[in-house]
Length: 266
Ligand SMILES: [Zn+2]
Image 1: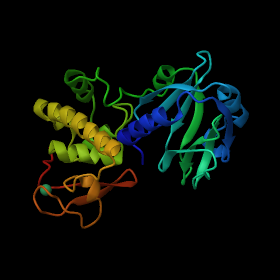
Image 2: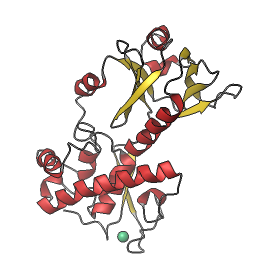
Image 3: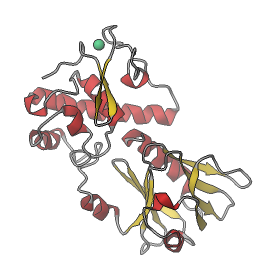
Image 4: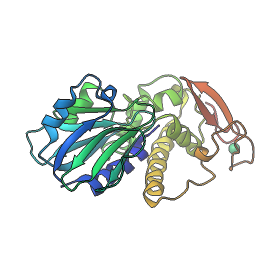
């Protein structure tokens, strides 16, 4: 599932591939992703202008058009969504659900095999974020260590559940929450009310470091280190820290992975 690093990677891709070219049409092959919005509304709002800027909050990506009074495009990538730019004459990628066709003959496509993504229009991203009651973006510079600490101190329950709660902090999902827990040396089923001040500080620092590193790796097209859980998410996965096997447990319908030796449960 695309989480903050993946969506940030797509935001940068969107910026490099899709800004400044006039849009001539929006082709909706699967209205399911529009969640009730009329396909003609997308056309009416976007065609004629080109995309001018992007903005990301957590797992949501927004794009404005060059004409300021128009709504913003909203994209959410669900479980399997992704963006792909094609040039004139190239075929549309597999599982294309919505295509933004440009005057240069190319297009930006939203691919989504499982169709859990979303394409919409919003008047302004900040209003949308507030309406959804999303927490601050996990990489927001305003989310300082004290601000993070203050938010965390108000929460109760499993660390994993808190980290993946988008109203706590926006951007972490199943995979990166596990990664942050490993890097912070904290078991995902620790109770946040049992964390010490040092634990909470470490968590903040680690969250920023892991997300930043993941974005760098995605941008560079490089593999993730084998010390990351991301490469060991299977029943017999290894912990590179201690040489033992990782543990897994179902939580909210998906597997959580961790190392019981390297991550303390508090
Ligand atoms: Zn270990």
